[in-house]
Length: 411
Ligand SMILES: Cc1ncc(COP(=O)(O)O)c(C=O)c1O
Image 1 (cartoon, rainbow, N blue to C red):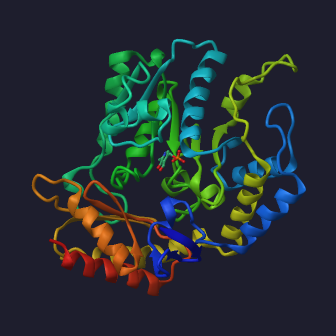
Image 2 (cartoon, protein in one colour):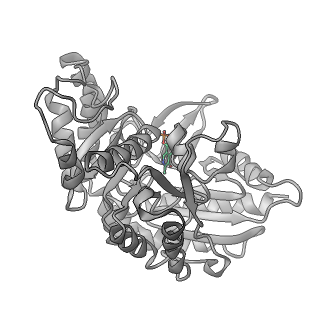
């Protein structure tokens, strides 16, 4: 149990300090208890606590939309607010379907995801997601969904940054187009860097190819940037880091530094404009949430983006990235380690599973790490780390040093 948090540390119920190696759940990119965000929330709650999200508006939501647009790659001109990553994903998928209908291409109903993709827990997200247990319990979910192959290849072991092998896996999309017909496919959704399924980096040239093929066939490309948005990959969005602009970006988490639930979908001007056919009094897009653009969340978002900017945290991530990479890869010869990969301020240390007991070794590492005073996260037998971007070099040394000791102590 955590009872308090400040900057890089959590305080446990028994009064210990734990160094946050995961930015909470990939969300507290500016660290914890940041004064500007705390003040903004209190002020907004006193001034305007709630305004209806339908028909009416309030300044903070529009201002935040403008700030997010300013951060995003050129062409991502519009913002639709949600309350989580899952809602952002389902919103983007619905916008994709409705966009094609609005343009008279109603046959485009297929959604394409990728194996080992995670897109939250809504019906849309679990359908395009590639985690079997997220689907196993809930029936067949959406029909008409297909998946690309994942890009986690043995040839890319110990890769630093983007791996060399696997760009050609994007050609699988041509196979799906040949199989189903481009005129039935609405959108492809991928995480530029897959986080929750074990940290899988995009091979060099892969995202570029996906962009080329989707454009060629009139298919929308959606980047799920719930994890990669807001500095995690040393740029505002992964789209900028990799130089590939999709048609929509989903985000959440770092948008409010994790402090208040909020997500967003960024869309191109072309997508927005396809809905603006009038007449004036008619609803353009039949979708929205009671808490879309909630004033307090909007205030938290504005203060968060201001904190990132004032402290230069995205630039800081870029400066720290080589140090982070070197520190992570120093674990290469430690017991049980079979792969290490990194990009931006993300790192993964993959452990050999215990025979017949997958996930147990990494979970033991998680428990031992907590006892040693560091918070790590595990998925399968992979240790995933994504510290707040305010981490110091000394704290990187502490995190990796303690993890090394934990690995030596594991059975
Ligand atoms: C890529 C991605 N998409 C969607 C989600 C779902 O976000 P949420 O838990 O806010 O619904 C996550 C959560 O980790 C994620 O990593």
